[in-house]
Image (cartoon, rainbow, N blue to C red; front, side, top):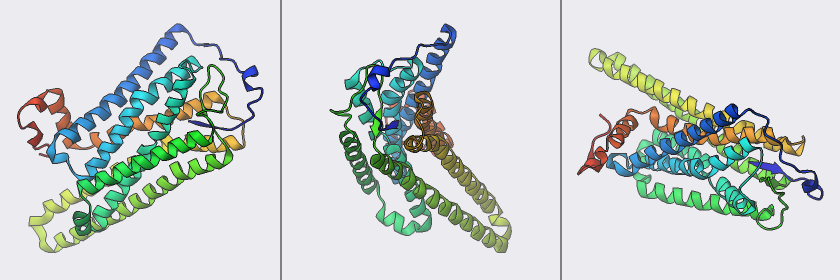
Length: 329
């Protein structure tokens, strides 16, 4: 999403929008695929939002974090992905300078999803490492407070990023382009704040979650070896649950890294190599695709979400007391 700062003096004199070289059929196909991605992002995250909001059974601290993630990804699908995909297809920014500034403010603000993923890692670690303390301390209200605080901090960071890099008033943006220039200091701050730190939290805590889950499974297996037949089903169910949890966590970390790593590597290398706009747009799209994949990772892997989708699509949520339906059976 960002480009490192470079000399502005003669930039507009040499800037021109490259002509579109694809055939009309490919051009239409690109728009159809882009519309499908945006629709999937918006609808997938909207289903998560409705599910968590409507069904009382889902009002848990962890699901409040999932809701926060879905809201940020929904807004990304609505306001960030369409102009990004259109400008990539058209090879130029066609929405003007004012909307360019608004676009970057929303884009920076919606990096909240990265820290929400890290918060989910903290939540799962606390729940597994000390479940009694977790039940006593972590509540829906306290989680919502942390979420609001998180959104406020990221909003302040986003405004500071735009202001101190001059895009709000002083930076020269040529007609047909829209990017956020970062000087070397802010480029390093952005790399640490939005990638290295949250990624480290996610990897370290999810590794701990995996280790703790494996220890729990081993302890249950050893207990059942002494108590024999009645608990064999419990052992089998436990093993399957831990294996599924490990699989979901592995997919989460892998997808997160694959979506964000290319962008941050290329963004950081902008201090060393010459930035190619086309390549940068491609890695930026990968960055945003994380919003498309998140509802699949956090929701579609779980039966309760499939149950909620059926109830929403069939309009049963408009029936009396539908909020009290058991979605876990």
